[in-house]
Length: 350
Image (cartoon, helix red, strand yellow):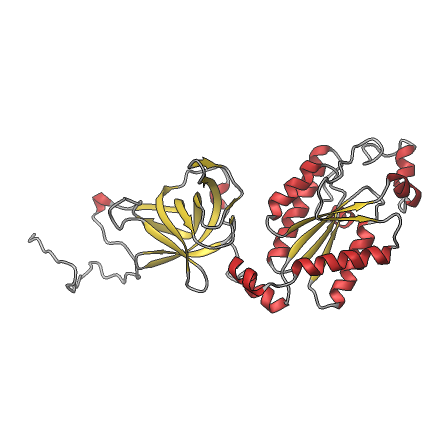
């Protein structure tokens, strides 16, 4: 067959047999030199936004003239700029470098990145059509059992858009303290005050969670930790929808609360309801301390299971010398201040 050549700037017409209608960005290639095909792609990222990138966020991947809907399925490593070493991380910092895995809404064809060529030079684009990251495609992500079937998706509505619509930012206010310290009472009282101000607020209470979402869990160390993990995961989802979430959970260990902080990420506030144990036992609204003292309950926090108080909480509320109304006002004021919109800073974060 005669050889036909064209150079940049010329128009080319191609007749396809059989007759097919290609989409914008489709590949035309010899059968012996096919591109890679995958629904999960290893990507080297240069992140451009001024807020961290987290797993679950969704973008359009622009590759030459093609666009594909993608979700950040994993953050595999982040480059520490001090010594250029790769470290595990939960998020990519602003203007950071990282290796990530992108999950594509459907299997796509691509050429891997090759320096000096245009191959594999992807960029991530947000809902406002702004480029938020350079994303050279390095290859097909390794298959991990079960993971390839999971494609988390993030909202195309930005946190700033939600904050503007609601009049406040979202956040998670994690209340910890001994049983009987007053966490749930204060959470509900603060919820009433915040709701009256037009704030979209909800409470995740320990007993309510155990009656539903966590009804299958006991009180072993492993089950307690799983209880915290589930509560934090739900709180993050609600906060990312723009809600203010007050969590009232004993979460007795520092490790438990650090797990919650890692899951929630930015917007996590630890609040210590600092009520002396003697006061908690005197109140004993559910009769749990009495039952624990009588040996009817094992592993009860404060009796035969330890409670590790926060060293540096964002807010410490001492309840022994104050009325519940006074303490709830202080809590509601703290939350209101934390979620207030600072237009310049919040717009930059979003």
